[in-house]
Amino acid sequence: MSTIEETIKTMAIAAKQAAHKLISLSTERKNRVLLRMADALAAQQEFIRGENDKDLEAGRDKGLSKAMLDRLTLSDKVMASMISGLQEVAALPDPVGEVTEMVKRPNGIMVGRMRIPLGVIGMIYESRPNVTVDAAALCLKAGNSILLRGGSEAIHSNLALARVLQECLAAENIDAAAIQVIPVTDRAAVTYMLGLEEQIDLIIPRGGEGLIRFVAENSRIPVLKHYKGVCHVFVDDTADHAMAINIVMNGKVQRPGVCNSLETLLVHEAIAAAFLPRVGEALAGAGVEIRGCPRTCALLPYARAAMDSDWGMEFLDLILAVKVVPDLESAMQHIVTHGSQHTEAIVTNSYANGQRFLREVDASAVMINASTRFSDGGQFGLGAEIGISTTKLHAYGPMGLKELTTRKFIVYGEGQVRV
Image (cartoon, rainbow, N blue to C red):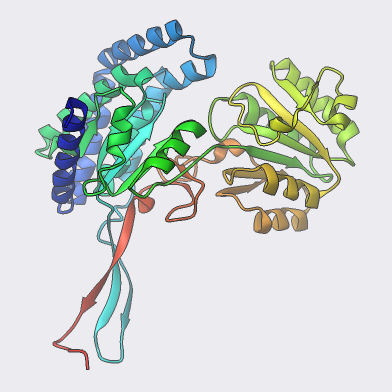
């Protein structure tokens, strides 16, 4: 084996051994180490920021976009979010060991289901080093070990965070191999990792569509996929215009470089003439480039004509595709054609239209009168999330603790034998 293969295989074997030990870890010990990690992050911010600065400097030298640098930055807000995320996960109920559906069969045996860890999670992700802490916290609480392979642009940040977390594990006499960051930036590391089906139970990729497709096409391990976040807001003809503008602005402008940001605005033709100039002015004032359909461009002279490729595009930037549609049916058909099953929203004062949108739109999160930016594990009460699945097996949407477990059948008998 090459040095890269030896490194990753050794780490994967250690992760599997650690996962076996985590099964017997009490909720109290898991919570105690999570709170210790929160304190350690707060105490070692100077060290972590120094390592993050190395990544940011290298990123600027490489010409990374403003949105990518934003994802890479461990700002005060991001650090506070990681710390509070650890505390929130510690406060959440432990799903491991939960027994449900106990049923007595005619022969007297009791059959139920017990929630158990998945085992070893392989995480492949880009840019955002806060994923290191969020993923580690959730996996630990759910009784899984985790093998993290971040992008080369965040290598110093990820290794620094892992060092802090592993020191906390060691202080609590927990195998430090439960949380590991692969120190290899060569892409061959990913390819080799994807073949370790005997050591790794699930692969979760987070990043651009290219990365996720590469993982899905090359993995011998089950993959939870999230190709892209093409999120739509449909403004119905009954919508409150001021509310709709706030929702659109929040979805597009607050953090354009994240997967739950708004990418396409659909507007009912009955209100287009009144609504589009108002929302267009607000968007333009925030520096948003509008790429519109012919009817949009007629109402907004500063808009660029949208190309076919703009429908279904995840811009991850201050760019918004805008289309005028005849009705709710047309809006939903557009979402079927161009959506990515991530998050879809309707702004409406019609109960019937809202309920129909809720029932018929196929996405991992569907919202009425709320920003797409709420599609997030923390916002949904899951604590920190490990990712958002846009496939339906075995999780759909933001993945919290329960999505990092599975269930096994358990049987209580009194000597019964099958006849």
